[in-house]
Amino acid sequence: MNSKLSQKQLGERISGLRKLKGLSQVDLANNIQISRPSLTQLELGNRAMDVLELHRLSMVLGFSLDDFMSENFNSNQELKEVTAVKPSDSERISVSSLNIDKFKNVLLYILEHCAGKPNVGETVLYKLLYFSDFNYYELYEEHLTGATYRKLPYGPVPNKLDAIIKQMLDDNQLQRIKTDYHGFAQTRYLPLQKADLTQLLASEKMVIDKVIEQMSDWSATAISDYSHKDMPWITSKDGEEISYELAFYREVPFSVRNYDEETEWS
Image (tube, rainbow, N blue to C red; front, side):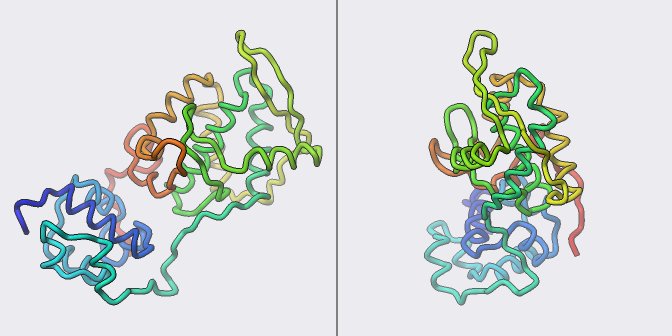
Protein backbone atom coordinates (compact mmCIF):
# COMPACT_ATOMS: atom_id res chain seq x y z
CA MET A 1 0.00 0.00 0.00
CA ASN A 2 1.08 3.60 -0.59
CA SER A 3 2.98 4.60 2.56
CA LYS A 4 1.98 8.21 2.07
CA LEU A 5 -1.65 7.39 2.80
CA SER A 6 -2.69 7.11 6.43
CA GLN A 7 -5.19 4.59 7.75
CA LYS A 8 -7.53 7.52 8.40
CA GLN A 9 -7.37 8.61 4.75
CA LEU A 10 -8.07 5.07 3.55
CA GLY A 11 -10.95 4.76 5.98
CA GLU A 12 -12.45 8.02 4.76
CA ARG A 13 -12.25 6.77 1.16
CA ILE A 14 -14.03 3.53 2.06
CA SER A 15 -16.72 5.42 3.97
CA GLY A 16 -17.22 7.88 1.12
CA LEU A 17 -17.56 5.16 -1.51
CA ARG A 18 -19.93 3.13 0.66
CA LYS A 19 -22.24 6.11 1.15
CA LEU A 20 -22.17 6.97 -2.55
CA LYS A 21 -23.19 3.39 -3.28
CA GLY A 22 -26.10 3.71 -0.85
CA LEU A 23 -24.86 0.82 1.31
CA SER A 24 -25.24 0.60 5.06
CA GLN A 25 -22.34 -0.58 7.20
CA VAL A 26 -24.09 -3.92 7.72
CA ASP A 27 -24.55 -4.33 3.96
CA LEU A 28 -20.87 -3.71 3.23
CA ALA A 29 -19.60 -5.73 6.20
CA ASN A 30 -21.66 -8.72 5.11
CA ASN A 31 -20.41 -8.46 1.54
CA ILE A 32 -16.74 -8.39 2.48
CA GLN A 33 -17.21 -10.97 5.25
CA ILE A 34 -16.13 -8.99 8.30
CA SER A 35 -18.08 -7.74 11.31
CA ARG A 36 -19.66 -4.31 11.35
CA PRO A 37 -17.51 -3.27 14.36
CA SER A 38 -14.43 -4.13 12.27
CA LEU A 39 -15.73 -2.04 9.38
CA THR A 40 -16.50 0.84 11.74
CA GLN A 41 -12.94 0.79 13.05
CA LEU A 42 -11.61 0.57 9.50
CA GLU A 43 -13.61 3.62 8.39
CA LEU A 44 -12.46 5.55 11.47
CA GLY A 45 -8.83 4.79 10.61
CA ASN A 46 -8.32 2.79 13.80
CA ARG A 47 -7.69 -0.51 11.97
CA ALA A 48 -5.61 -1.54 8.98
CA MET A 49 -7.12 -3.62 6.18
CA ASP A 50 -5.39 -6.66 4.76
CA VAL A 51 -4.96 -7.43 1.06
CA LEU A 52 -7.93 -9.81 0.91
CA GLU A 53 -10.26 -7.25 2.51
CA LEU A 54 -9.03 -4.56 0.13
CA HIS A 55 -9.71 -6.83 -2.83
CA ARG A 56 -13.24 -7.60 -1.61
CA LEU A 57 -13.87 -3.90 -1.04
CA SER A 58 -12.77 -3.11 -4.59
CA MET A 59 -15.19 -5.72 -5.96
CA VAL A 60 -18.18 -4.52 -3.92
CA LEU A 61 -17.55 -0.78 -4.19
CA GLY A 62 -16.29 -0.95 -7.77
CA PHE A 63 -12.93 0.81 -7.64
CA SER A 64 -9.55 0.22 -9.22
CA LEU A 65 -6.87 -0.65 -6.66
CA ASP A 66 -4.31 1.56 -8.42
CA ASP A 67 -6.69 4.53 -8.48
CA PHE A 68 -7.85 3.94 -4.91
CA MET A 69 -4.27 4.01 -3.57
CA SER A 70 -3.30 7.11 -5.52
CA GLU A 71 -2.92 10.40 -3.66
CA ASN A 72 -5.39 12.27 -5.89
CA PHE A 73 -8.19 9.71 -5.64
CA ASN A 74 -11.67 11.32 -5.71
CA SER A 75 -14.51 9.04 -4.66
CA ASN A 76 -17.15 11.04 -6.52
CA GLN A 77 -15.19 10.97 -9.78
CA GLU A 78 -14.08 7.37 -9.48
CA LEU A 79 -17.60 6.19 -8.84
CA LYS A 80 -18.77 7.75 -12.10
CA GLU A 81 -16.07 5.90 -14.03
CA VAL A 82 -16.97 2.38 -12.91
CA THR A 83 -20.03 0.30 -13.57
CA ALA A 84 -22.61 0.82 -10.86
CA VAL A 85 -23.11 -2.14 -8.54
CA LYS A 86 -26.77 -2.33 -7.59
CA PRO A 87 -27.66 -3.81 -4.21
CA SER A 88 -29.34 -7.19 -4.42
CA ASP A 89 -32.92 -7.66 -3.27
CA SER A 90 -31.62 -9.10 0.00
CA GLU A 91 -29.64 -5.96 0.79
CA ARG A 92 -31.44 -3.39 2.88
CA ILE A 93 -30.81 0.32 2.53
CA SER A 94 -32.41 2.21 5.37
CA VAL A 95 -33.86 5.60 4.47
CA SER A 96 -35.47 7.86 7.04
CA SER A 97 -39.18 8.39 6.49
CA LEU A 98 -41.29 9.90 9.27
CA ASN A 99 -43.96 7.59 10.61
CA ILE A 100 -46.27 10.14 12.21
CA ASP A 101 -48.43 7.60 14.07
CA LYS A 102 -45.34 5.88 15.48
CA PHE A 103 -43.85 9.23 16.50
CA LYS A 104 -47.05 10.21 18.29
CA ASN A 105 -47.17 6.92 20.16
CA VAL A 106 -43.51 7.16 21.18
CA LEU A 107 -44.14 10.70 22.41
CA LEU A 108 -47.21 9.60 24.37
CA TYR A 109 -45.33 6.63 25.80
CA ILE A 110 -42.48 8.82 27.03
CA LEU A 111 -44.92 11.32 28.53
CA GLU A 112 -46.87 8.58 30.30
CA HIS A 113 -43.68 7.76 32.18
CA CYS A 114 -42.15 11.22 32.50
CA ALA A 115 -44.78 13.98 32.32
CA GLY A 116 -45.09 14.04 36.11
CA LYS A 117 -41.40 14.80 36.58
CA PRO A 118 -40.84 18.53 37.14
CA ASN A 119 -37.65 18.58 35.05
CA VAL A 120 -39.30 17.21 31.88
CA GLY A 121 -40.07 20.28 29.82
CA GLU A 122 -39.56 20.65 26.07
CA THR A 123 -35.76 20.53 26.24
CA VAL A 124 -35.60 17.23 28.10
CA LEU A 125 -38.45 15.78 26.02
CA TYR A 126 -36.66 16.55 22.74
CA LYS A 127 -33.52 14.78 23.95
CA LEU A 128 -35.44 11.71 25.14
CA LEU A 129 -36.95 11.46 21.65
CA TYR A 130 -33.54 11.95 20.01
CA PHE A 131 -31.75 9.30 22.05
CA SER A 132 -34.63 6.85 21.59
CA ASP A 133 -34.45 7.29 17.82
CA PHE A 134 -30.67 7.23 17.45
CA ASN A 135 -30.06 4.45 20.00
CA TYR A 136 -32.58 2.26 18.22
CA TYR A 137 -30.98 2.96 14.85
CA GLU A 138 -27.51 2.17 16.18
CA LEU A 139 -28.71 -1.14 17.61
CA TYR A 140 -30.92 -2.38 14.78
CA GLU A 141 -30.05 -0.21 11.75
CA GLU A 142 -33.77 0.43 11.39
CA HIS A 143 -35.64 3.64 12.13
CA LEU A 144 -37.87 3.86 15.19
CA THR A 145 -40.01 6.86 14.24
CA GLY A 146 -38.15 7.99 11.14
CA ALA A 147 -38.04 11.54 12.51
CA THR A 148 -35.21 13.75 11.32
CA TYR A 149 -33.32 15.96 13.75
CA ARG A 150 -31.58 19.28 13.28
CA LYS A 151 -28.50 20.53 15.12
CA LEU A 152 -29.55 23.58 17.12
CA PRO A 153 -27.70 25.42 19.93
CA TYR A 154 -29.48 23.56 22.75
CA GLY A 155 -29.07 20.18 21.12
CA PRO A 156 -30.87 18.03 18.52
CA VAL A 157 -34.51 18.95 17.85
CA PRO A 158 -37.00 16.90 15.78
CA ASN A 159 -38.12 18.46 12.52
CA LYS A 160 -41.87 19.06 12.05
CA LEU A 161 -42.39 18.72 15.80
CA ASP A 162 -44.44 21.92 16.08
CA ALA A 163 -46.90 20.68 13.45
CA ILE A 164 -47.22 17.27 15.11
CA ILE A 165 -47.71 18.80 18.56
CA LYS A 166 -50.37 21.16 17.21
CA GLN A 167 -52.22 18.24 15.64
CA MET A 168 -52.06 16.29 18.90
CA LEU A 169 -53.31 19.32 20.85
CA ASP A 170 -56.18 19.78 18.40
CA ASP A 171 -57.06 16.08 18.71
CA ASN A 172 -57.01 16.28 22.52
CA GLN A 173 -54.14 13.83 22.77
CA LEU A 174 -51.97 16.34 24.63
CA GLN A 175 -52.33 19.33 26.92
CA ARG A 176 -49.71 22.08 26.91
CA ILE A 177 -49.00 23.95 30.13
CA LYS A 178 -46.63 26.76 31.03
CA THR A 179 -44.86 26.50 34.36
CA ASP A 180 -41.99 28.05 36.27
CA TYR A 181 -39.08 25.74 37.05
CA HIS A 182 -36.30 27.12 39.26
CA GLY A 183 -37.05 30.64 38.06
CA PHE A 184 -37.18 29.76 34.35
CA ALA A 185 -40.26 29.58 32.12
CA GLN A 186 -40.95 25.99 31.12
CA THR A 187 -43.28 24.45 28.53
CA ARG A 188 -44.57 21.02 29.44
CA TYR A 189 -46.93 18.50 27.88
CA LEU A 190 -49.39 16.17 29.60
CA PRO A 191 -50.73 13.07 27.82
CA LEU A 192 -54.53 12.94 27.58
CA GLN A 193 -54.57 9.42 26.20
CA LYS A 194 -52.41 6.34 26.49
CA ALA A 195 -49.98 5.23 23.81
CA ASP A 196 -51.18 2.40 21.58
CA LEU A 197 -48.68 -0.26 22.62
CA THR A 198 -49.64 -2.43 19.65
CA GLN A 199 -47.74 0.15 17.57
CA LEU A 200 -44.48 -0.53 19.46
CA LEU A 201 -42.33 -3.60 19.00
CA ALA A 202 -40.80 -5.18 22.09
CA SER A 203 -37.36 -4.08 20.89
CA GLU A 204 -38.58 -0.51 20.42
CA LYS A 205 -40.14 -0.37 23.87
CA MET A 206 -36.94 -1.78 25.39
CA VAL A 207 -34.79 0.98 23.87
CA ILE A 208 -37.20 3.73 24.94
CA ASP A 209 -37.40 2.29 28.45
CA LYS A 210 -33.60 2.32 28.73
CA VAL A 211 -33.45 5.97 27.63
CA ILE A 212 -36.16 6.92 30.14
CA GLU A 213 -34.39 5.02 32.90
CA GLN A 214 -31.04 6.62 32.15
CA MET A 215 -31.94 10.23 31.34
CA SER A 216 -35.46 11.24 32.37
CA ASP A 217 -34.31 12.58 35.76
CA TRP A 218 -31.61 14.78 34.25
CA SER A 219 -31.98 18.54 34.18
CA ALA A 220 -32.37 20.37 30.88
CA THR A 221 -28.78 21.61 31.20
CA ALA A 222 -27.36 18.16 31.97
CA ILE A 223 -29.12 16.36 29.12
CA SER A 224 -28.29 19.18 26.67
CA ASP A 225 -24.62 19.05 27.65
CA TYR A 226 -24.67 15.26 27.24
CA SER A 227 -26.23 15.48 23.76
CA HIS A 228 -23.51 17.97 22.77
CA LYS A 229 -20.89 15.25 23.34
CA ASP A 230 -22.68 12.67 21.18
CA MET A 231 -20.86 12.00 17.91
CA PRO A 232 -23.87 12.64 15.61
CA TRP A 233 -24.29 16.13 17.10
CA ILE A 234 -20.55 16.91 17.21
CA THR A 235 -19.90 16.08 13.57
CA SER A 236 -23.00 17.80 12.14
CA LYS A 237 -23.03 21.40 10.99
CA ASP A 238 -25.03 24.02 12.88
CA GLY A 239 -28.63 24.18 11.69
CA GLU A 240 -28.32 21.15 9.43
CA GLU A 241 -29.94 17.74 9.61
CA ILE A 242 -28.15 15.11 11.72
CA SER A 243 -27.41 11.90 9.83
CA TYR A 244 -28.45 8.67 11.54
CA GLU A 245 -25.38 7.06 9.97
CA LEU A 246 -23.22 8.96 12.46
CA ALA A 247 -24.60 6.80 15.29
CA PHE A 248 -22.22 4.05 14.15
CA TYR A 249 -19.22 6.23 15.05
CA ARG A 250 -20.19 6.65 18.68
CA GLU A 251 -17.83 5.68 21.45
CA VAL A 252 -18.32 4.94 25.15
CA PRO A 253 -20.47 6.05 26.94
CA PHE A 254 -22.78 6.96 24.06
CA SER A 255 -22.62 3.76 22.05
CA VAL A 256 -25.32 1.25 22.88
CA ARG A 257 -23.42 -1.55 21.14
CA ASN A 258 -20.28 -3.28 22.31
CA TYR A 259 -17.87 -2.59 19.48
CA ASP A 260 -15.07 -4.42 21.26
CA GLU A 261 -16.71 -7.75 20.48
CA GLU A 262 -15.95 -9.07 17.02
CA THR A 263 -19.38 -10.44 16.09
CA GLU A 264 -19.12 -12.40 12.86
CA TRP A 265 -21.64 -11.67 10.15
CA SER A 266 -22.71 -14.53 7.96
